[in-house]
Amino acid sequence: MVKFQFDPTKCILPYDAKELRPTKCLKCLEVCPGSLLMFRPLKEKDENGAPKFFEIHMLFKAYSKKYCPDCFKCVEICPEQAIKIII
Amino acid sequence: MCKFCRKHAKEHGKWYLNPEGYTEELFYKLNLLDRILGRKPKKVRDAYKSADAAWYPLDISKQLELVDLASKPVLGKLVRMIGNHIAIKSHSGQVVPTEDALKIVDLSHDHAVYPCMCKRLFKGQDEYKCLNFAPITDITRHTPRHWKEKRLSPEEAKAWLQDFSDKGYVHAVFWWCDMPQAICICNCDNKYCYASRPKNWYDITNVYRRAEYVAEVDPDECISCGKCQERCQFGAISYDSNGRAQVDPRICFGCGQCRGVCEQNALKLVDRNTHTIAKKIW
Ligand code: SF4
Ligand code: SF4
Ligand code: SF4
Ligand code: SF4
Image (cartoon, rainbow over all chains, first blue to last red; front, side, top):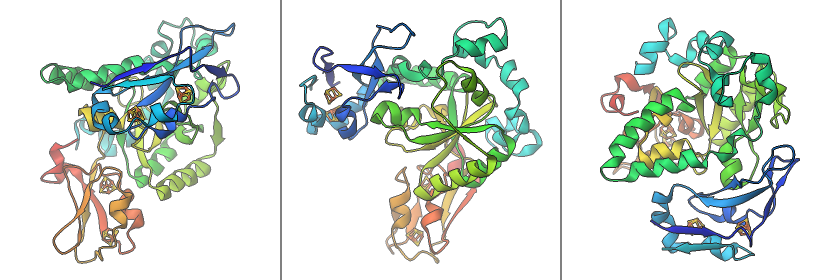
């Protein structure tokens, strides 16, 4: 199975209270041909109980073998070098 | 007739055409609110205040992660069995053609569209693709950070469904909590859908069941234009040695969206339940 590593110190995705989700960047989601990447909330909450920050996460990992080895688009597009894919 | 229709349709033919599935009585009988909140609400109205439709679905990744187990050689079979059981008791759906989706609008009330959670989480885009109805729309109206929603009249809801049909999105009716409580019609784009992918990739049937129909081509009418193949989100259409379109009943979901692009009217939906091959494939 492909290993997906995300560095939350390099990519910081704050909660946008108007849109009720992170709205910054998300370019990696846009380029992934298998739509394997998603955002999900980190533990820290604000005073209203909303998640403060989000991380990028890989799902359907069994399928990453099919998509990732010839791709690496998320790694290439990430302006913060926050993603590592280990085959 | 599929096993759900046998159990829940009564004289209405299909489980989702039974008006009982759209009543508030059934909704509360099935304890939906308790499940949303993860606790027993003292009073239903109190529960409205704390249900948070805006954030509740965000961290579904933990459940979705479990579907990977279905790809394991031995364990996979057991995981699929459990997954299929949980799917019936939670939030899953069945593909419906546009004509049935329109009937569901007539059976339900208090319509509102929400951004599709799949596209939101996997693309970071809010596209208004999920048509919800009461009592879900009643709950979201009462939540503190009520979900970004657009209210629609039944006529608007029908026009809006037709519009998605014209774009080739696949309609699917979803229950939440248990059969036969229907809560929404999604208009799915397979690439992002986190219901159809566990089904297509991991074979967890009940998460996203095929329609009660399957498509067939009249080869005498087909002029080999190729439009239906382009339209089919499931890759069910190929060509025979004469260049005529043919539908693989083992792949077809019966969504009927291929019909909309065929200028020859060469495609039609037939009953899956009486189709020699498709009747066993859901
Ligand atoms: S492309 Fe990089 S910086 Fe942008 S959201 Fe993805 S991980 Fe974060
Ligand atoms: S390598 Fe390609 S397929 Fe794999 S997660 Fe990144 S963008 Fe998606
Ligand atoms: S061939 Fe089947 S799955 Fe494909 S568009 Fe037609 S009805 Fe839908
Ligand atoms: S759209 Fe109609 S005419 Fe064109 S290939 Fe399909 S069945 Fe044949």
